Length: 356
Image 1 (cartoon, rainbow, N blue to C red):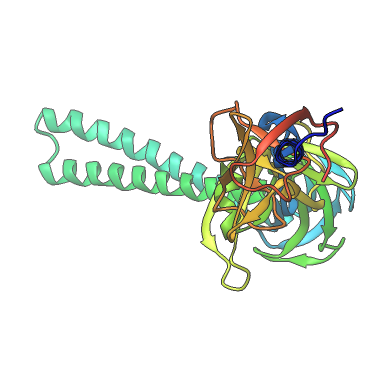
Image 2 (image 1 turned 180 degrees about the vertical axis):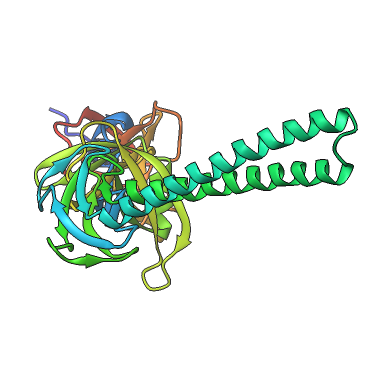
């Protein structure tokens, strides 16, 4: 039996070595290729976006909070209401003794009657002088004198009527009435006390015409003005409000500006303190989805099954950030985003829940 030659044995070993080496390379290449494909979970950007709420200190205030004062002098003879009572517009609240004003009114009425009587007599005399003068039985001077008497008395009658009107107005003001519907919150006047014009007697607060006053930080005013919705939180209740105006004056100490809003339904009682809340009109990404690459915050999206870093330069680490694109078709990488690099090949699956 013939044995293989030395050359044949050497060639066989060489083929075997090449085969083993090639097989090992194929296995290594497959493993290396598999290791470069990153498994990630993704979700449409719309599922991550939300419209966050911001807030500021606020208080419900009455637009009519008035100290009612006496307008005439006199003694308080009657107090019709007490603290805590609700009143309607034009309701009588306080009565001031009016005897002196009634007395003066009577005197002025009597003075008016006297002047009207004198005017009537002067007019009759003028009529007779006119008749006599037409027949040349009265001089021109007499006619002029009679006409002057009538004019003077007419003027005095008008003057007396104004004085009587003024006295009657003062008499009417001996009754202090409610200028609007509200609630009596303080009583300064006392029964039997002497008051003069300007003496406060009651404090009346309007409980119907109530507005919301809020102190909004200057940098947040623009976002508040463009908000989708506003509401006032007082204790555990929410009241819808609408924006009325932003006062064009900034606090020198806090940098805040006062904002006034109107309640769309029944307002809370004046003085109610709480928080003005507004919903940002801009959609925001949650802070946890952001990653940092080369010092810039952003998110990873998918294009042709590869990772693409989308920078969001305005984003601040740890804070939610506005989504600046109108395109709703972006797909955002959720799980697996922390170690991704630009251009990594991806194997995609749907994100199961959206949590940090």
